[in-house]
Length: 366
Image (tube, rainbow, N blue to C red; front, side):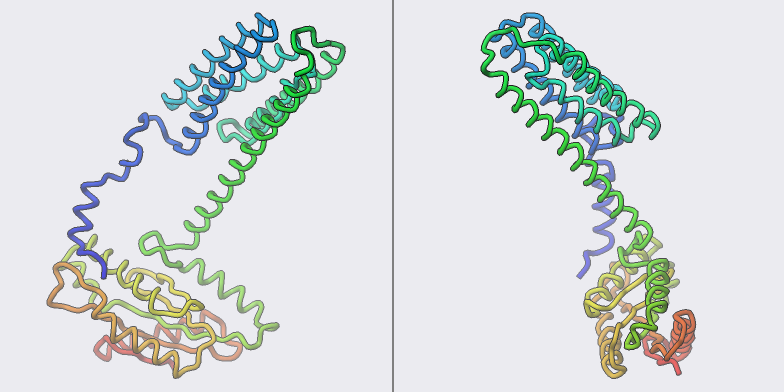
């Protein structure tokens, strides 16, 4: 049973839509990007703190100083991210990785593999939506060319610091972390694409008020089914158009917002009342289309009658306690070689006949 509509209105007023962002800066338009950059900047600062002690231990004072500056740069990037300046944050982080890779390779050579961090940086730039496609490609390839240039430049540079035996371990560690960073970037991009595809699917195929399918989805589905009917001769369905009775009066009595609540409640009940193989779509306004797939006429009649007789007990709305919510039904079973548009017309005519017969009833098309 849905909660009273006045309670829902109160909850809506008490919980603003942007309450989930109350702890973020006002410029945080993209929560996912904010959190990703925040983690990257924090880890970047921690890693370079460790590098300070590592380079001191091998006797490279210059690289220790460089990493002190690197920590400050990552903290600056973290601050800019907190301010919602994602483009500046990304450029700052990219600058730090490039400079660090070049200097570490210049002092230590290729043996420790610091230049491998250029690959995940190039990937991050290429998939970032902060730049135009052309700029992302140019910047990404520039970083990859820099990687190749470092290999040519540093091929004769030999490691001249303490503990030369650890160079192989450092190389493997850097390759591993660079690979992990690259994987994280690619998985993040893949996850983003999946979410975007799902969002686009929801927007194009789902009704925003009720969450059930919309007209566009139904037409595309039935068009595909009809084109495949030659090979699927057993395809069979029954269309049911259901219309909420006296809906204009409902809106007049309790208002349009509460009226929307009635539509949502009816939609929720219809989706639970049909079989898993059936489809419920909002056809427009207070009308719903139910597609009963491969069902015998007597079974479809029993199912629709069950919905008709039970819905009055399912929809309880504040302000309408002395009235019940009922539906009028028009039913049309598809004929052989009949177009979907023709079947829906027969169901529509039957539904209007049900209205004229006094509502709260079922009329089958001829």
